[in-house]
Image (cartoon, rainbow, N blue to C red; front, side):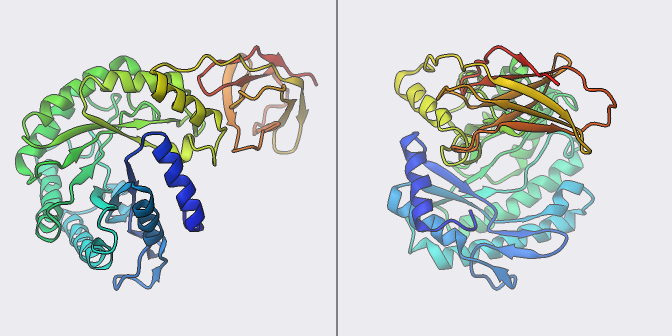
Length: 381
């Protein structure tokens, strides 16, 4: 979003509102990596900044969207090699960010500046021990206590993730029950776990069990809201998830939560980024309660393969069909890659980076936003 002007922001906000969205999460306001610290608002905390956040808030104010602002983030978080003191110091930086943001924007964009987002994504592995859970609670309280003083009307939202290969739903529920017992969450603060389907941390088969256990944990903290963060992507290929899968995610977690956020409509469902059929089909789903019946995509034509220095280049010609959202490439009968349509740009080739001396069997099929796929067409040398 760094290069978006006001017009682009307004287009995005109107698109989100059309799809029934009420909230947008913008995060972080200040970020530190191994090279530098950068902010998206004028700050005394670093030299490198732009004014992207204000463009977001101004557009949200014009278009009736409420913004959750993420405070600060340090990439060292992912290494899990930090001390408790380091983490608390990061929270204190976040408090300074909050002070500056309230002074700059709260009065000017009061309708849009709605809540805070806790950028630090907690998993079910790094906080297994009571000691680590106590540190996490202390970190949360460092922010919560300060935010209560400066902006008691702004809720805090956090969105942890889980991996069932590395822990159980019971243990995850107990983790959060213990953290909730030690934290100063207020009425209307929000616990919105990622459903982890897009990233592969959970399966649809086990999603209900995990959200049931998390719901039990949330019930021990009166006033805390329970939402779901729906992952609308397929991390295997970093492509948009078929809406048939997203519908299942919504239906399963809807039994336990009171609202939804997602990651991320702006990346994987926006008509300005991917095939507009995702947005159109989702609008139909919101309006009718069922996914539209799309005509199956037409099969591709003239599929060819060519050996290159980098690997094997697969080319095809797309059929004439408005419903095509992307193409699946199969190698020796196994799904190798999905290549999505980018806005109005239809891909016609894919490079399989391989050192195999022989060319195996390649097939290409077209798919739509729902998840329907055309027949596969085998490549010819």
